Structures are given as structure tokens and as C-alpha cells.
Image 1 (cartoon, rainbow, N blue to C red):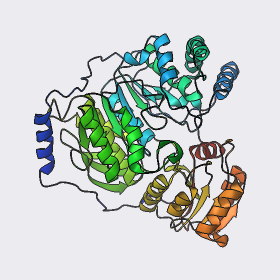
Image 2: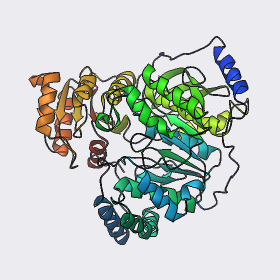
Image 3: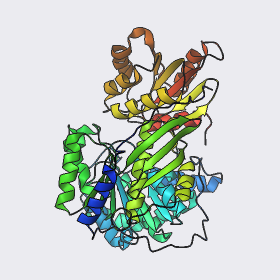
Image 4: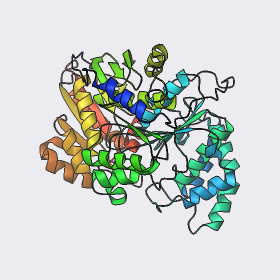
Amino acid sequence: MSEPRPSDRHDASDSDGTFEEIVDEATQRDPDLAVIEAGSRTLRTQSGPAQAEAVPARPADPETDRALRAVEQELAGRWGETKLEPSVTRIAALMDVLGEPQRAYPSIHITGTNGKTSTARMIEALLNAFELRTGRYTSPHVQSITERISLDGAPIDPQRFIETYEDVKPYVEMVDAQQPYRLSFFEVLTGMAYAAFADAPVDVAVVEVGMGGTWDATNVIDGSVAVVTPISLDHTDRLGTTPAEIADEKAGVIKQGATVILSQQPVDAAQVMLKKAVEVDATVAREGMEFGVVSREVAVGGQLLTLRGLGGEYDNIFLPLYGAHQAHNAAVALAAVEAFFGIGAEQARTLDVEAVRKAFLAVLSPGRLEVVRSSPTVVLDAAHNPAGAAAAAEGISEAFSFSRLIGVVGASEGKDVRGMLEAFEPIFAEVVVTQNSSARAMDADALAAVAVEVFGHDRVQVEPRLDDAIEAAITLAEEEAEYAGAGVLVAGSVITVGEARLLLGRR
């Protein structure tokens, strides 16, 4: 395996005291900031402390596995996640008949284009470190549908997933009968998550939008903290063709009196978010101004960070993830948890730094620059748009000293595959194009036609089957001497990465 190499590269910001002045000014400006102070510290006697988990495999018990497959089949019979009717009418109706379970706990709501799931996992880890029971709802899943609903840092147990579905099914059918369109796959899962969180019960929910914000099914919660990760062009057919248009849709998660944790954004997107915040009397904390990455250096297995939060500085934080983008996600996650506890507006203090260090040390983000094999090193990354590909390319170039890198790319229809391939082109010696088993997978030959335009004929190989593509890439990597340091990066889609993970024996 090619070991990550040390680096003295740092991202520094605002070392002249301006940061403290801004925080002080913001605190004085809005003393009535409506941030929920975590008061319900339910004892976690049933689940114990959160444990880092791998992506779950299929249930070992045959009966449970059959029951889970039956639920998956029923859900698959509904509208898929790419077929949308932009409205929260159906999910609101479901919440009504379920007794508004989403009102039983405070929520942190996360939108943006890239980095949402990693940021959600970091927020969850931090909240768990402060003895709060958490529910996390993210999408899509890498391997198992149960990953989408997590309790206390671990995917919901398959049996509990099945029971939750059976509990809400009669209410789902009731709403189906009353609406012009049946509830979609994503809407039913969202209802299940909110019901499971209320039943647990959790102290706080960490909720990632599926797409957009205003009409996203998750947007029946009133998040006291709204997190906006970097916005770039994706789902342009549904959300808009400019960062500003996309930001306008995503700004719908910002609720009256909330705190907005705003990552670094394109100027036009930031302007939209700030305007929305003014309209609903929300307070905004901006990366690079009120919080951010003070310094970072690459280390074996991840990176060492100093972060500036809303309440002060946190040093010697080891994050076992690669890439500058993950450092920025960590800063956003830290600020979000500080805001949840009222730090920066109601309180001038930091969180317990040891708890913060332990939380970040335990963070996992499967399929995000994840090493799954050595000799040669195989890395998986779920990048599926140009911005994600650029971040992955920068991260792998910084953290690994590959002498030759072979790409395996399988994309979904409707994505900006040219932009994604152009982002990868400088780091790939050759690329093997393929397709995953999803009905939404882009045909390998069609993807190859674009790849040839970007890479040239001599650097493109086509293998329609993913297993053959991975084998071909490994063979190309092994053409160099055994210790030459060649590697393979599999990317292009979360589904491609999930299937590659299974093929390479990860659980």
C-alpha cells in the first residue's frame, strides 16, 4: 500500500483577532438567538455508548433477511428517488396521522450539494460524545438500506427496521388513498426515520435532505440549526442551473430564528442564503469568518487539525479521513454542534476539547476516500459530480504518493460526466469505464465515448461489468513493479462504490 505522505500544507484564516471581534459583535447583535439548549439527556442504558460501525452486511438470520428483502421490494415498488413531485403535502399528511413524531425532538437539518453525509456523521459523533442520544437520517446508502436510519451512531437493526415499516405501513396506505400520488420511496423512509427517532427516543435528530430543501420530504422538521455544505451544480434539471438558483431551493431548510452554519460558498449562493436568513430572523455563522480551519497537516491515516469554532479554538484534533474537504466538513460540524448548545451567541465558551478529540477520532465515512485493499492500494470515493470529483482528486493527490493511478468510473444517467471526468483526468494515468447494476446506471459505451474525448483512445478501457473493470484496473496497476506505488480509485456513483465495496470483501 502507498502510505499517506506527511505535508506541511496549512489552511490558515483570520489570525489577527478579527474573528473574535465578529463573534462578539454577533453575540451582542442577537442576544435572543433561538438555539435549543440540550436539556433532555436521556440515559443511554439500552444502547450504551456509540460505537463506530462498518457498513452493515445482510442479516445473518435467514428469516430476518427474507423479511427485510420483502420490505425492500415493497419500497422499490414506489416512486424512486429520482421521480419527484415537488411538494411536502404527502409527507405532511403522513406526519399528521402518525401524531407528528418529528416534533418530539430538536433537529439539525443539513443541505448542500457535497459533503452532507460526512458532515452528518461528524455532527452525530460529537453529539454522542456529549451523551446525547442521536438519530441520523442520510441518503443514499452505500450497501444496506438500514444505513439510512441510524440510532446512536449505528445503523438501525434490521429487525427494528422491519418493525418500523410494519408500524407505519397502515398509515402510509391511509395517506396513499387520500392523495393523487402515492407516497414515494424516500417519503416512506423519511416517515420511518422520524417515527423510529420518536420511539427510541432520541435527544436530537441529524437529518440530511434528499434533494434541495424547500420541497424535500425531510423539510417537515423545524431545525434549530440549519447546515449548508458547499453548493455546486448537481440535479440541475430539478434545482436550477446556477448556484444561486440551487441555493434558493436549498434555503428552504432555514427556519424562523434558527442558526445557519454556512460553509464556504460561491458568492451568488451565499447571497441567497444570507437574504433568506434576514427574512426569517436567523443568525448566520460563516466559514472563514465566524469559524473555520486554522491549520491542518496530512498524517498517516488522516489529518491533524486545529479548528476555530464559535466559542474558541480546538487544537490537536486527529481526523481519520483524507482531503481538505473533510477538514472543512469537520469545521462545519463543530460549529453546528456548538450552535446547538448555544455557544457563540448565548455562551462564550468552548466545548470540552477532549470530548471533541475523541468524537472526531471515531468518525467513519464509508466510501469517501476509503482504502479497501492494499498491493495495489484500492481507494473508493462516492464522487458523482465535478465538484466532488475535484475534491477527491485533490485529496488523493495530497494524501497518497501514487506513482501511477488507474481510475474505475461508473456513473448515473443525467450527471455531468464530462465535468467529472475532466476533474479526474490530471490524476488518472488510465481510466476503466464501467456501469453498476442500477437501472439508472449510464451505459458503459456511452460513458466511454465521453471518456475518449477527455482522455484520448489510448487511456480508456471499457468493461461493462464492474467486477471485470476492477480486475482490469488492478491488472493495469500491477503492470508496474511490485513496489512501484500504483493504485486504483473507484468513483462515479454511490452505487458503484457500494457494489465495489462488496466485491472487494468489505462489510
